[in-house]
Length: 233
Image (cartoon, rainbow, N blue to C red; front, side, top):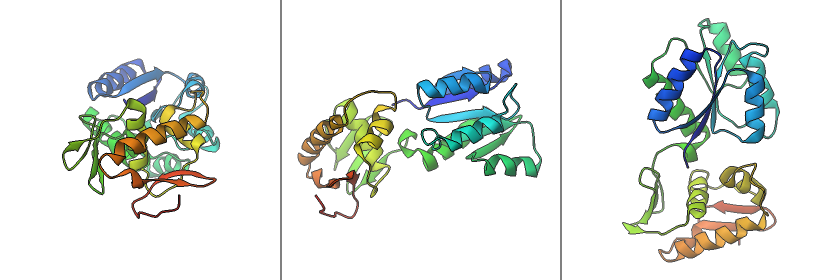
């Protein structure tokens, strides 16, 4: 899936420059000029990352970041603050409010993209364009291929996204609801049992290469991809 970045910036020239460079780098972008419009956007669909200007009209970027961090639905969205403020106290304030990084204007497009990639690797590794490998099972987002010892595993698009998420969040149990939010999207209204169907399809595809035991059911809780090969089924 293409990484979705919300740009919250009231200076149109900077907004357009950021948008152009991020789209050239392969990101999907949305842009708004104030926190109120940003809030409406986030209520409709969660972005993978927010680029947030500090000095916005009406509600500041800091206030908006605080709101995002206080809401259970939005608290995990990575935030990078964009600001002309360069004083150490301002940087500390931005980080303490919950921002993941802080970029001082002016900045180069290369620096911005590098910072975005670094934050995504830390906070949302399934959104990063890096290959991941567990027990010879390799998933490469660059060419959208899953292989085991060069033998390709054929997956549908939903099974691919599900496997990518689980391979980048190993050894942690996720409920069906959490998987729906993180893989399908939090505004996609489908039954939680839909997850079971796709888990079965994923296991069936992995069984052909002897890796179906990686996906484990934790009774009463959900599913995990285990690197320890526990057998709590």
